[in-house]
Amino acid sequence: MSDKTVDARLPRVSGQLAGIRDNELDKLTKLFAEWKIRSVLVIRDGMLGWEWHHDGRDSLGPLFSCTKSILSALIGIAVAEGAIGHVRQPITDYIRHAALREEHAGITIEHLLTMTPGMEWPDFDKLYRSLRDAADPMQFVLNQPIVHQPGHAFTYNSGASHLLSAILTQATGLTALDYATDKLFRPLGFRKARWTENGGVNEGAPACSCTRKIWHKSGCCI
Image (cartoon, rainbow, N blue to C red; front, side, top):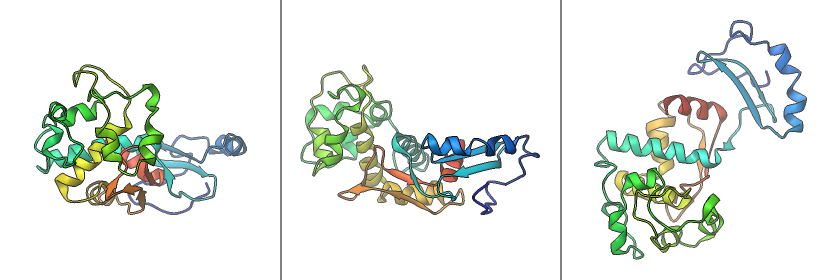
């Protein structure tokens, strides 16, 4: 094991107690480095039995599109706490932008969560780079034509996730990072995370970075 820090929320035990042959895993660390793997955690029954990190510690790393799972969980928390009424509300109840069109009233929060808002969004998220580089990402997303009835066709859509982040901020008065820190990360015992933003809205696509232990604990909750 490279990282010797103790975390009361993620009990550490010996590999033997966890039923892990850590000596065999130790032999793989050279391969992990060759394969450009950044971190490996072996957790069994909620106990950390072995870990390896390329830089010797559990440092911040990007979640990439797993950010969307964190964001979806935050929307669920906001609904449970009453900040958002329900997921079948139209996005126009929360989004305030000059690019909104009448047809956007047919798109609900649930459509964004299920990536079925009906927008023209090419396969494999081909518009992501344009979204990321846009001076106004909200306008970029809202400017996409509606080509399907919302709820009828799935297209992997990072733009939908960005709208969710904007809705969360409008509903709670907090950025996605601040809300996640208050409602998810800090209650789980973690405080170290980073999330890029544009115009006061954290990017809804692959933009959240946290430690691997945060992601493990958050994933168990989800």
